[in-house]
Length: 233
Ligand SMILES: Nc1ncnc2c1ncn2[C@@H]1O[C@H](COP(=O)(O)OP(=O)(O)OP(=O)(O)O)[C@@H](O)[C@H]1O
Ligand SMILES: [Mg+2]
Image 1: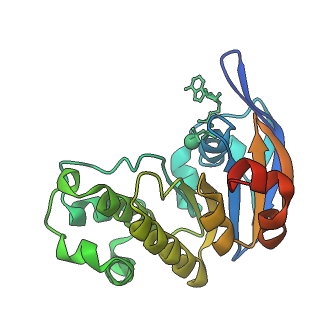
Image 2: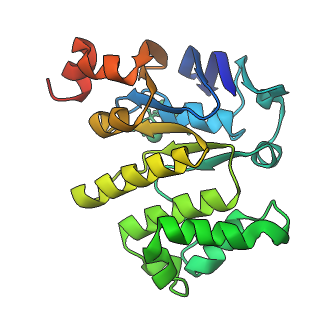
């Protein structure tokens, strides 16, 4: 479904991605692992059209995403839930969710509300509360829920577990798995390697803009390199 090849991305003189390649098949849940500054967010931003690569290609089926803008990419079904949530604080939960569906016709939105509220019953209880007054975990649920309202074919999740209490982390990962099982293809960026690999089929490890390791999640969990760097030995 998604094939990234030879991607080079710069911020001015900083060479953030140095020719990375990876792919996600339809229906898969794939994790990008890597330390702070490895280039994970940069990779997601390039896929969703927020950054332009200097070289390389991003293919979604037959579409060359590197030639399109962010709005066109959303319309093709690629939805990016950014790092740090970025919900609208002065909109209610309901309004935030509606904003996620902006690129779509109104007719089919009803059942997507139901889908989001089934995944996150807490959001239903808080439907009329201002986004900015939700707890950190609830804001993360809202950010993912808003992404789902855009009816993604491919969901890009940037560190959904960041800053959440352990119990909530487990819940968010279980929900991500459930979303994937509903047929949404997912590219997940995480620092919580153990959790991310436990729900993923495959993974890639980024180090300073380069893919240094890739494979089945079950093989990565047992690899010495991943264990030492990301799983505390
Ligand atoms: N707007 C920017 N201007 C200049 N350099 C940037 C910018 N954004 C990111 N970088 C640099 O690009 C590199 C990759 O950053 P990126 O945000 O992709 O890392 P990351 O893997 O998502 O890290 P983290 O786990 O901390 O979120 C880093 O060295 C970072 O300092
Ligand atoms: Mg990041």
